[in-house]
Image 1: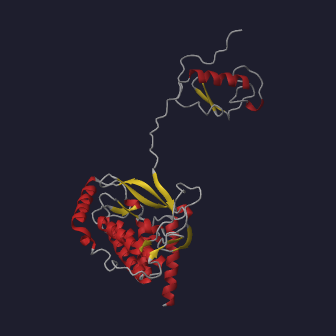
Image 2: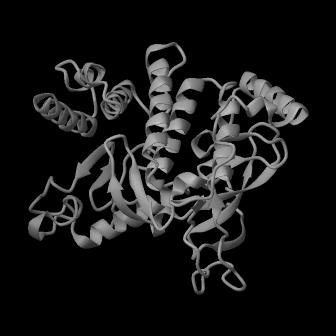
Image 3: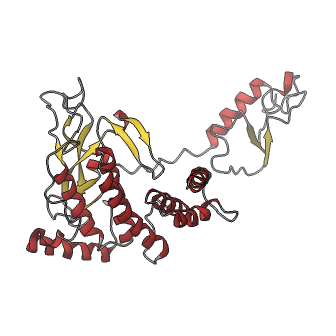
Length: 358
């Protein structure tokens, strides 16, 4: 019996058209035959097959076809995998496993510094605010938002502790040199009046969730509680970050985020007056970023910024300005994300209720 020939003429296979797809389509004689094109008899041997077989072939012929395809197909190229160095975690988890330290590269001087991170998955959400405020327990992650390089002194919030443009790096390096030469005198005009924070409740000593390290956790052996952080220490880090923000692109956006987080810290501590003070500073910076040429933070579009500006105006009792910015979000020409639009509508209804009450 003459050998059955699968293909007549030159054979060229499109790369990747068979592997993992044989059960769905088979390439034969320049034609791709899909499994949906069922036939009553085998396309090769003529045997009767039920339900079309495999792409119109009986099981035996289909197996032979697949074996032939694999024999003539070129081998898969070895995938190019770029090795990624794992993040090095140093030290032990502290504060009951809520805090841990990692090694990060400073974007200004290039040295490696140790920073503290919060295990967000271990926190509980207790309260949310219209200005994106979230109250967590048992610790406030905003207390650890600012990272400071131990070599050059550069400080920035976590989201901005990232690679810089060359001109930014030069300006920040020069600013850090001036700060090291002249000392804290350069920071006196930033957050004035917060240098001498009295140790009074609530929150003069900022709770960090003291307790033993999580059993069996990384570095659990010998791990002790994390000492409480003073409010003055936290303010010092934010003050330094605000100083360096002046020399960044999108400086107003970075400063606005820092002021807003300070407002959230004070809100968690129950300090209403300071909450309003920092909210006003954040509002001023957000307006300059929104309406000026500086640009908004990278994680915020114009509609999210307009919403936040409207909410901060509401918190400060500036209702007409709040209505103007919220109207930009809920208007018919708005391109806001559905979630932001819904939040803006809720605040618009709240604004109407306040007006009716007055």
